[in-house]
Length: 163
Image 1 (cartoon, rainbow, N blue to C red):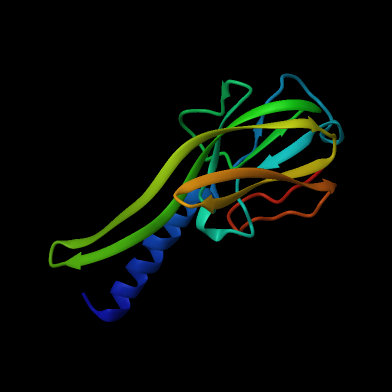
Image 2 (spheres, rainbow, N blue to C red; image 1 turned 180 degrees about the horizontal axis):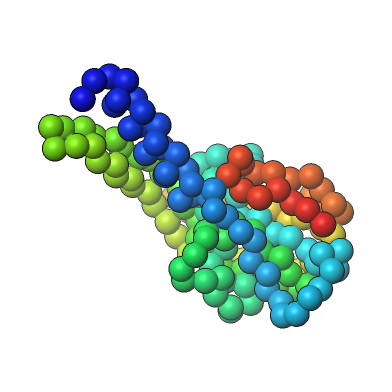
């Protein structure tokens, strides 16, 4: 395989990994029926200040799973009030591209941990972001309220906040 073909294969593989990590991301709506977006709050599991956790996802909202198959959920839209979120914190993510006479292979490694966090008194039109930090070997989650109709677009692969 020539150098140009190898580079093309690498770029395609990286795009595929990026898309799998969030390009198909859709927010999870944790309520039934039609509710105007202006009566909802939005929580993101991607911390724009800590790229190491850029693949973290919302697994459950108030005990309800966000879906086994389908897009990765990096945001959840909820009605006002107190809610519990199960977040899968994912870090130490790396991809490896290998090549041989048999072809190209892509592999990845990462660490993950499911953690529950409660967010009290979520307000309509507010955007909330899970913040991650290490305390020694432990991961600590916090939530920041960015305020009403805050502009938030954590990555080129995740849907931006909209109301």
